[in-house]
Image (cartoon, rainbow, N blue to C red):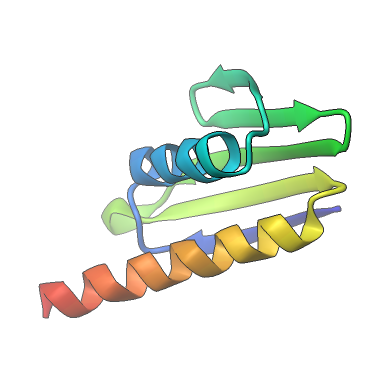
Length: 91
C-alpha cells in the first residue's frame, strides 16, 4: 500500500525521526538509506519512505509498507504531533 502525506517538518527531521522510530524503537533494520529514500525491512515486512522537500521547510512523505500498518500509522501520528508542536512554538 502507498500513501502520501504532508508534514510541516524539514525532510532531514522526518528522516531522523524515522531512524529513531523504526530502527531504535522497533528494531527494524534500515537496509537502504539514500537521499530522500529509506527502506526498513525484516522477516515480518518492510516500510519504505520517499521524503520530498516542499515549500517552507515542509515535506511530502510517501509511505509504502507491508506488515507494519499499525506502526506506520503511529509514526504518521507522531510526526503530525511534532509538526503541530513546532508550529505552536513558532507563534
